[in-house]
Amino acid sequence: ELKVEQNPLFLSMQEGKNYTIYCNYSTTSDRLYWYRQDPGKSLESLFVLLSNGAVKQEGRLMASLDTKARLSTLHITAAVHDLSATYFCAVGEDSNYQLIWGAGTKLIIKP
Amino acid sequence: DTGVSQDPRHKITKRGQNVTFRCDPISEHNRLYWYRQTLGQGPEFLTYFQNEAQLEKSRLLSDRFSAERPKGSFSTLEIQRTEQGDSAMYLCASSLARGREAFFGQGTRLTVV
Image 1 (cartoon, each protein chain N blue to C red):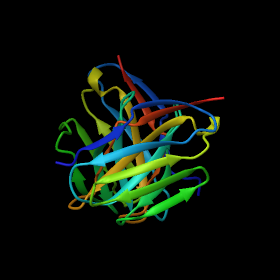
Image 2: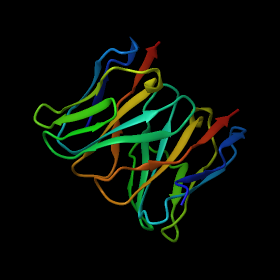
Image 3: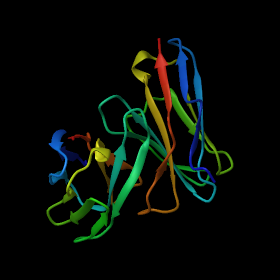
Image 4: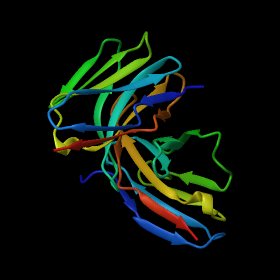
């Protein structure tokens, strides 16, 4: 059974700092997603990672995937307040259609 | 196209009543998903449609839950004999293909009193 673990679950950081969120998963997968959720809002897609070594960047966010280690990272560079949100990773099992979601990382960026 | 649309946005119901939610996916998307999310948790998969066929359903899903997508366009999720534990945000998402991003609707927040 696929399990997805994110850490940290809560992160408070200062503007301008760098940090990394980790997403570990327990079985083989053919796809991994990162989503952002603002309080009371729905989920916004950030990245789709499909292959080992995949790296994608958008603004101050960069996501990478190591399928051998079953690990994805979401790196935040020079954080700004607008990036405050909860970030989820979601992993798809090879054999079915569903995504298994991490518990989310609540990120607070202080001015 | 304005994205995935869900209706209603909020629903308060008494325990034991039946409720039905609607989802209109992005028009060219043939894949449709229902998820449930409780406060402080990640979404939990409920069911998946490809066109009008329901191809997957969570093993954890009670028989009180049923979903349809009769013409491969909009979908409905019905919960019969609601319980307080059903209180959650119900999210619908659609996508073009496996490995493509899924776009989520704003969700229906259900409160069972």
